[in-house]
Image 1 (cartoon, rainbow, N blue to C red):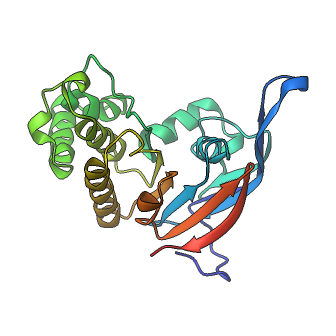
Image 2 (image 1 turned 180 degrees about the vertical axis):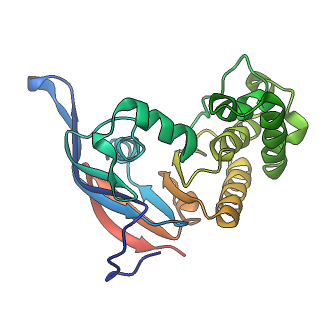
Length: 236
């Protein structure tokens, strides 16, 4: 975690981000000058009520949507100005994204879901399956490798989604309400596995959540209100 006077280049930074949706007379401002930085290996929780802009902020920082105003930088490179081809490459190789419901492909087994990013990157099927199996093992769901998402519990499916997000060895993982659909026990299992793996691999995590118990796993917490960062708190 960086100190206040640290001038080093952060892994990821958003500066004065603005984003609105809708037409001229019915526009909703999702972001209003939001700023944050994420350093290598840091776990940062972004919290706030529904509609505060936290998911939109994550989507802008992950290159999923482009902000209307402001700048997003990844390792000093302007992410918001990159062509879609380069953004897609970053999402395949250096970014991992996890959503509340995992968004696994229902027709594929857990093993094939986790192997998919490797296959898209040109890794052989045999090697991709080997690495996918290793990541399923890390998250405690190797026994479910031949199950499809509809055959797994919510916790098993979400741990499979986390394995898929981390299988390529990303520098940053963007987790949008990753425990929102889980009970307290499954949430604890998912967060424990995610934090342990991130610490082990040095992966930075940007975690969006409304759950204070989930936010407590982070090194630092930023609270959002009305599309802007409202405050900061050290949680660990």
